[in-house]
Length: 335
Image (cartoon, rainbow, N blue to C red; front, side, top):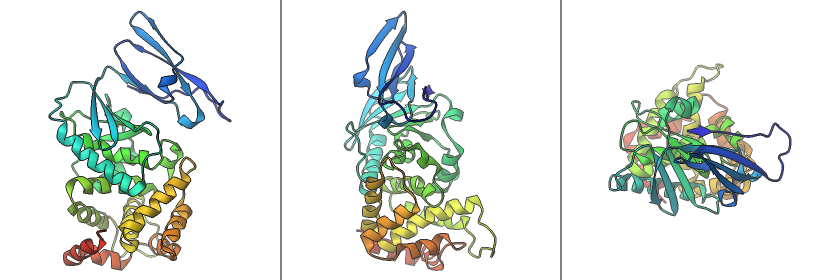
């Protein structure tokens, strides 16, 4: 089960305070704060009471706890703690663990390393999907995955993803889309979840890059063509674009940005922006500044062509609607 607890009601938080957790003796628990500095753990009957030190740097206080079975996975340099309601066959977890490792490696190549002393992640089975997954996640996931694929993960904190494992053997890589938020710094500044287009599509773009790392380069073409079907080729003049169109267009914007400046510049600019703005938030001006620093070109004009006009640039649409052109461009874009 997942709880959020914060006795702060506004204003500047104190330099340090305690989060008090009372759970059954046989529950696993993971919280915000520094568990190594827990001041006290007391027991009464079948319950434990734990006091965990919190600071403003920990972000929103949270608690994940339940009667879980723990397994440890290794995904690249990350240690992944898998908590499920039933024990899992270690051999069955081998392939999903390898897939997850490829996704996390892709995130590091695009966004840089997570700025954490302890390189650990938690993937925790959600007991009730209704309480774990939001419509925002659903709307973007629909654009980057098969139409019949259900939403199966949501970030609970910077290092914790809740997943829906009701279908049986866990596909651990299903947590990868929400884990992108960790690399984007969302755990340090939850306001990032309220980003406006096109930056609101950045987590979904990261997830799409993760899918490409696991399933192969053909995923890129599939996703771009699916997105293009969402955006009218001849949009009506003087009419605002719908939210569905704007979501698809925002995702396509990042593909266009990567195509225009190349994957190496794209990765370097995003990594630079995230490193510089970690914990403080970023907006479209920060994105433009990072790309102009890397390219010494007028990136603002490129952004205006994409986001201030209806539809998508004709050259971009033509490139991806022509298979031969797409294949040539894919080969040219490889680093």
